[in-house]
Length: 269
Image 1 (cartoon, rainbow, N blue to C red):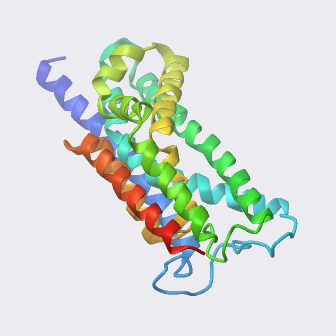
Image 2: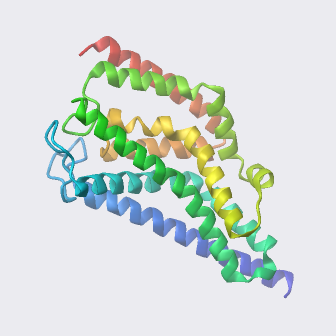
Image 3: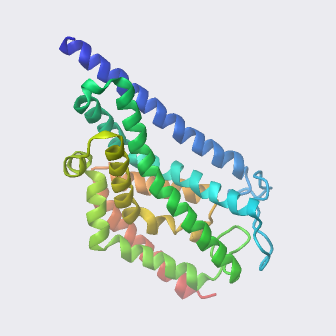
């Protein structure tokens, strides 16, 4: 096969991976929009469309169906919010694995790419399960409003300040550097085979979790299903990971969160 033919094959492969990523992100956002209707938009109150999506009355036991719906809601949010920032890593892995496993066949390479992406999303699905448990705990103690946000202003301010301070920590900078350097990550963590691809996805997801999980907890401040808040946090994560000034943006975001949290605390109940 000539060099031109190989380059064309890689380009077609990239198009397939890009199309798959875009399709998955679109499906996730459509699920959010379809489930939210306008009821999760702070500028237009209406009814919720997902069955049993409204939180139960305080101190009312959650049904199994509500647990599952809440988990699905969080999992869809994590896919919609985190996959845009992770797409360059997936695309670079796709190109490298096709080169490294050229003799394994196109099917093997595609399965490896899917395994890598699955490993990454597994971490955020596990986070979704923990977030549901946290949501349940906050509702049990009466700390969640009808819009599924933390109701005590002091608590919201405290969470914002904590998130802002975390933005300035060394662990945030280290994990963000791993997320912003796909080539360096692949060189340091490369493992062959399907199990290796899945483990690499888990490793990248773990760095991403350590980088962004505290930001995701801000959903409890602005509203778990506030679409404007979700879009804003998605943009922040994407800028931190993809923009040339992403590291500086993370520091600026931290300062803004600290200032906003202090304002909430000073405002009182």
